[in-house]
Length: 636
Image 1: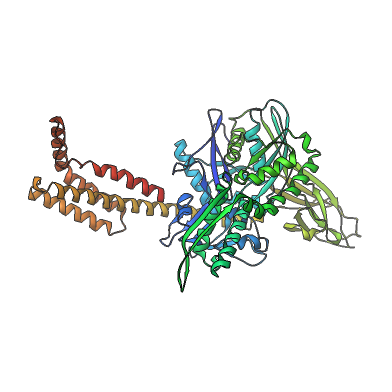
Image 2: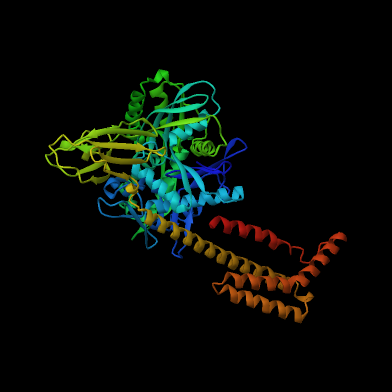
């Protein structure tokens, strides 16, 4: 439990974009990032200078550095290599590891786990919150897709820990959206949250009332999102270009990245226009010269391309409604969440399936983060009289005789929950059992996802069916599982927290956290050095301009002293010592102080006479200074 008054931020860690919010004055507010934007692209890049860029700066340089720019990392969280074959094909960076290994990413001549990449995004949001609040932030509520399995949830917690945040709670994204939507509701309503993001699709049915928000059912598709819309458009354009020019743009990483950005832009434009033009000059070249890509895409063409993807939403929606025991006529509102719900085809699908216009009173990009902040307020005591009841999205059980999946916790069970069942041995005189824990809905255990296994040993020899082994499943509020097995006769017990299901041990997480902190310090030093060099270069420019414009007004002694100081700054800029550059700049400012003061007085006197001062544009460098600083800050 958080101590009263300690702020807990709410983070929507999205596939495409991420958002951070906080409860302030009884309201949830979105916190802008350090570039001043409310939404931060979930992009991390590694430059050839050894810098790590996060958010807008990372996204801006993706075209020139595609293989070292990591985006859509959420699709790889808590997943093994053999689970991401379709996702691997659509990213330019390298995915490594054996089929059963947890995914690793190769970028910037190093290897990273998906939680490490996500931690960079979380750290940027944490810094934005700290800058906004004026103090350290240590805790966060982080949202995940409702259909995230145990491994993916644990990977998200690991990312938080690596970033220096304690994840106070993990909540499902549709539940967070319902919390934001339902906080002001006084009457009971049954709502559907249709959450279609960049990389995942979730649908949840909830009951929203005055003091309680209860998830009735949830379903989804963890391999479906707006990225797939982009991919359909990319392939359509690339196929047309190949047919016309004989060149496949998908074989060129930089051309493909330009095409990906153009496809994303076209998708957004087609949400409000009936057609859009894609114009990419000098996209590639062959022996005959440069090639340009120019074509028009209509909304109807785009909708035809994505129709099979939109149709994939139908089965999860129908299953969620069936599990909740409701039909569409009993639903009061359908709340749209995620950027992909802006696509008219998606809105039309929702309207047809539920027979009503979807609710558009919430911002689909921000509502999940706002809900997470409200949950943070509930935990810290800032928000009173609201109870949130979430569910586990997938059934949990163990493998029993014949390889059968015996479920202990059915999907859509309200959490936290504890369930137990007594099992026995399958052979005479069996002295040990292996408990293999699975998550999923298939009849045979091996068709589901293996979360972990452990042995219960030293069972007294006895005929098969005699020993009593009590297996207990305990799911916490984050949807993370503890399993124990106990020999009832001897009292001997073995348990496992399915903690390592993300593929990272506690030691590895701590080591990554240390590296991340060290890297943050290193990045800060690089930024400070670049800023010092930038300031030094600008100062030299201003001083030299001043000397040139007012050469006749400065005596030789002062001029020599200023030129010596200029040389000192120039020499310092050639080093890697930010402190030395700053010191040299201060000395140059002191050397020019008397002269600039004299210029200022003359300018004031001339102004009082109503005449234009000679060199009256001497104040212009101050404006240039502002422009240069702003540009530099945006690039950081």
